[in-house]
Structure formats: structure tokens, C-alpha cells
Amino acid sequence: MSIHPTAVIDPKAELAPDVIVEPFTIIGPHVHIDSGTVVGPHCVFTGRTVIGKNNQFFSGSQIGILSQDLKHKKGLIGRTVIGDNNMFREHVTVSASTMSSFDDDHRVTSIGDNCLFMAYSHVAHDCHVGNAVIMANCAALSGHVDVEDKATIGGLSGVHQECVIGTMAFVGGMTRVNKDVPPYMIVEGNPGRCHGPNSVGLRRNGLDAAARARIKTMYKIMFRSELNTTQALHEIETAIEDSEERNHFVEFVRKSLRGITLR
Image 1 (cartoon, one colour):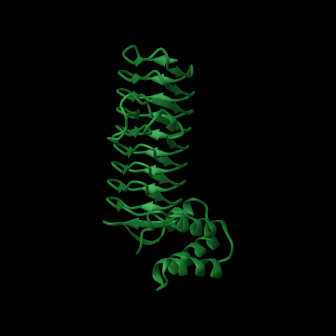
Image 2: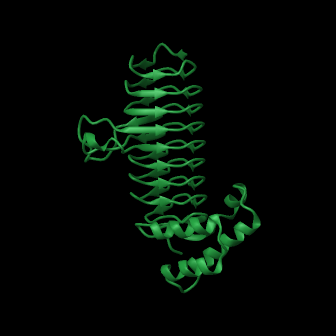
């Protein structure tokens, strides 16, 4: 274990033998860090926080910190769970979950594997971020936001509480997201509007031409026709062959609580 002498590590913290902790970092008593992880200088890790393998935290990262929710009761320690192979650039903040009582132990702020959080991005309390997600500089998630796998959120964007960002969606820079962002689509603007399929992202994630064509047809039916949402979903299920992307898109729209971003 390589721990700089200026770092302050609580004796109750659990760190794998090969974890690196750089100068002036503070790690609290309920933190567990797995092997291969590098914690940069001037970081603060607190709360009931579990961090997986091979993560990298740059200077000033604040992980598992007390949420900014004013309803959070004094003395309760929230939970944060982070997977493997993530990169947290300078001054990224990840808030622990809120709890109204000790019975709320199931609540957690969670981050999957292989994500990139660029400088000053923020993940608020009780958010669930999937795998291979990218958040650009100063992008911010409010509380209880879900981000599905392989989504990208552009710099200076803000996501409203309890919104869902669909898989492989692309949120353009400086976008105000106040409704759910459908999977596979590009959303940008203030407020955010859907501008078509995320064609580049779909190709980069290995979707073949047939899958991309189905997604383009779904976009036209949902966003370019005169059908309402219920009618559009029925038309999508009728006109487009059964496939993973069709089924996920339809399920996403049907489950949406805030409604999806429109054109």
C-alpha cells in the first residue's frame, strides 16, 4: 500500500494492499476501496462508501459526501457504491444517498463500471448511473436520476430530479433536461428537445445497419408523425420487427413517469 504521510486515513477504513493514496487526502471510517485504485491529492472519501477495482480519482474528488438534500436527517450516514475501471477527473462530486430513517438502508447512490466523469461533474444523492457512461465537464445530475448504460451527457448540462437518461442517448452541451431522454436519441436545448437518433453513438457501440434503421423508423413514428404517444407505441410494435432495441424503447416510454422529451 502506498499512502502519502500527509493523507489522513481512518483506522477503520478498509483499503486493498495496492491502493495508492496521494497527499492531503482524507478517507473516513466506513470507506472500502478495492485493489488497483488510485486516489489523487486533496480528495475526500466519506460516508458508507464501497469502491471497486482499478478506479482513478484525480485531485479534489469528493466521494460519498453528505447530500445537499435539506431533508436529510443529521447523523445519518448515506451509502455510495462504485464499480470498477471508472475515472473521476478533477473536483468531481458524488453525494451519498439520503435517508429519512435507519430503515432506509436499501437506498444508495450507485455507479457502474467503465464510466468517465470529467472535471466538476456532479452526481447527486440516490442517483443510479450505469456502465460506460460519460459525463462531460460541469454536467450535473439532480437527486434520484437514473442514467442507463452508454449514455453521454454534454458539458454544463443539468438534469432534473427523477429523470431517466436512456441507453446510448446523447445529451448535448448546456441542455436543460426536465423530462426523460429516450434511449438511442439526441436531445439538446433549453428545454431539451429530441433531434433524431444518436447515429454516431449507435455505430460506435456496435449496432449494425438493420438496428440503426429500426431506431430511425422508431424516431419518425414517435417524433415526426401526428400520432400521440399511445398511438405511436402501438404503431412501433406493429410496424417494426421484434428486437432488443424496439422492446427497450417501448418499455422505456411506457414506464416513464415524467414523460419523454418531445421534438
